[in-house]
Amino acid sequence: MLVVNPRNGKWRVFVDGLHFANGVQLHRDGQSVLVAETTRGRVVRIPLDGKTPSTVFADGLPGFPDNIRLSPRGGYWIPVNNVRNGSLFSWMMEFSPQWPIIRRIAHRITSLVPWFEFEKSKTSMLLRVDEEGRTIEVWHDPKNRVSNVAEVCEADGHLYTGSYYLPYIGKAKI
Image 1: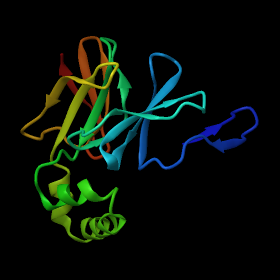
Image 2 (image 1 turned 45 degrees about the vertical axis):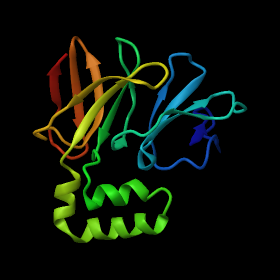
Image 3 (image 1 turned 60 degrees about the horizontal axis):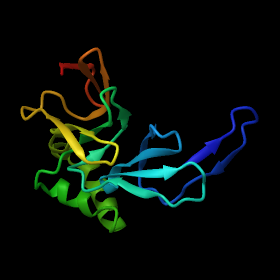
Image 4 (image 1 turned 90 degrees about the horizontal axis):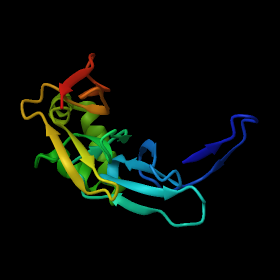
């Protein structure tokens, strides 16, 4: 993760060693940020003071977390895509952070075999977690009409979802 000074354009490495860092959200305390580590299936909390060590905020998520966002009802929304389903793809992604060779093989297979794209794009889930990272609400579409959810926004009694794959915005009443 980089820190950029917008006044002079200078930047520095703030945190390294993250795995596919995706979706940064300022924590309600204003003293830390939450970062989804997509390929590790977790969210980490990183203090902004640069001295305090990072901690795991939410771990063992059922798939790949993406852009974590605040919920106006408290806690945070975490869209999770490619929910683990026992498939070969799920297995390869499960072990990809620990075994880089598996990640490379998975990437090559998914780029060469079209049905992998179909398989991996089927399932998404929305998790709302509390201030400690514990799951307090789950939204799941078992018919997979809304897949590859990468963003969720809660407003006016609805959840709005965005996808990196589908050409529309989803809307669901809470």
